[in-house]
Length: 314
Image (cartoon, rainbow, N blue to C red; front, side, top):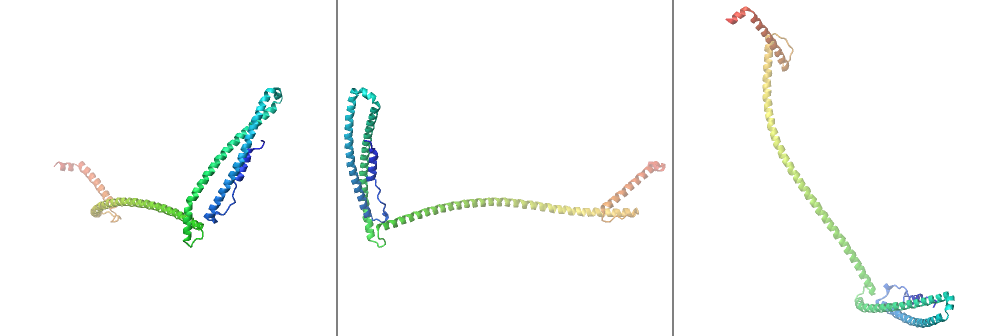
């Protein structure tokens, strides 16, 4: 067989079992219509599967017949090997092609057998899926009946799908509200955390300010004590200054009296101001130095004269 049976079975399987149904607007179909549509699809699938089984059985019989023929030919070839060894040697290339073709056909038969097993597996899977769909359909029929009764008891909706759409809309709205609530809750928690942080910072600042206030109060008390001490010292300084001022006034009066006496007795004319105590003292000093010098000279003169010596002896 020169054609590829695998490609043939694959194309037939896709054409008959995996045919794409025309798209419909399922949103506008009632559940009963959907159920009939599913049943119709299941019937079509079963018909296609039965047709495929018959065709596959025919192909299998043909393959078996072909395999028998190949075995018969192989026996003939084996007999011919002993009789026509020389001929086979001359036509070795032809024999190799024949054997390669036989190997390919055997490999093809093996592949078809594998394909048959695969189709059997898929058939079993389709049956399981069919049973699951029937079970699911039977299980969901209670909801269909319930929704139908609800629809009959209300005037707001005309179809069951309208109620389902309304329910889905409400669920989406609820989900959005829940998400918004979660975000608001997170925001509240964040604000609470910030408030606690601010409160802690405020407490720390108040404590720091209280500590600074206590330090300032201590400094104030210390400053007050120093003020009292300095006020006491200032009063003492003022008293000392008053005493010194009185003493200075007395010194200046004594200096002025002494200056006036000296200038009067010594007939000294001066233009020194009566308020210039330093100049007055300087003048008095000069006068006393002159008097001391005179005294020393007189004392020397008395020591040199005999009369003074006699007088001193007496």
